[in-house]
Amino acid sequence: MTNFNRFEAFEYDVLKEIGNIGAGNAATALSTLLNKPVDMSVPSVRLLPFEQVAERVGGFEQIVIAVFLRVEGDTPSNMFFIMQEHYAHQLMNQLLPGEHINDGTYTELEMSMLCEIGNILAGSYLSSLADFTKLQMQPSVPVVAHDMAGAILSYGIMQYGEMGDSALLIETSFLEDCQTLEGHFFLIPDPNSFETIFRALGVGLDDK
Amino acid sequence: MISDKMIKVGMADLNTATNGEVLKTTGLGSCVGLSLYDPKQRIAGLAHVMLPSSSIAREVPINVAKYADTAIPELIERMLAHGASIRSIEAKMAGGAQMFTLPGQTDSLRIGPRNVESCLLMLEQYNIPLISQDTGGNFGRTIEVSSENGILTIRSVQKGIKEI
Image (cartoon, rainbow over all chains, first blue to last red):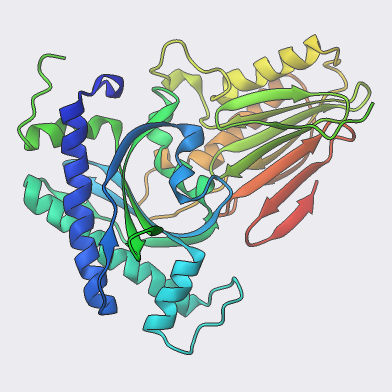
């Protein structure tokens, strides 16, 4: 059993690099899709108390659009791509010009389109990560939700519940104009997956 | 002596309220918000239960507010300490959703329905009547319970506001 409380700084750096590689490729994919540059933040890897997991997306009650994929394979994980509503509107206006009515509701076609965007981005995140680590990562079909960030993210951290009151999240955000956070990737490896990730990247956990 | 004080109950947390205070917990997905109320003494309690059973706990010491089988006894105890009577306590609950359903999903991921079942079982053990509930579905809920009247207010994105 890996003890997250005792991760060293360089182990956090390894996890940050994972967020960097994954989201970097996803940013390229999004940039291609939108035909404009997309910036991203420095990845943040933190062991967060449950109460704070939704902090980066505006708090537990913040209404967001989230695409969720369960990743199976060598390192079982949960993956979320979470968009603020106004960013989802912006994406729809670019990809389905004139179709979207900005009234806080989404048609089935719009939800399906947002789901597919999440799927493409998460797919490129995971495939670059799998290439880099030589680990098997098989994403499930994507599912999309329009709901409170807390309700959504808590689904992804359940497995941490039985061992403490905090969860480890690898988060990278897309930026608009180098400042506003717009889209967020959360890779939440199952607690037992860290050892495999570290081994694959040549970081031993033997002396713990 | 009516105060509008709002007491926040976090995830895997519980608390009690008196004197018109309101207990609130946000963003319930598969977690269950279980409220207990003694209408005679006007004492309310709220637990944000995350997991069905402490038998799977690998933490030491365990956070009793996290598991249905430990949170409910603890909440009852605290209400009794405030002067509530076990015979007049009534329960309501909300949450226990299945936020995402994937094809071929294993039973261990059905946390929401299992949390609900486990809470029901505990209430039965203490002979506490469940007078209303709003559980299941695939959406998140924010809830508030008032120690003034025991009304449980539920807010969700898709279904608006509802009182039970």
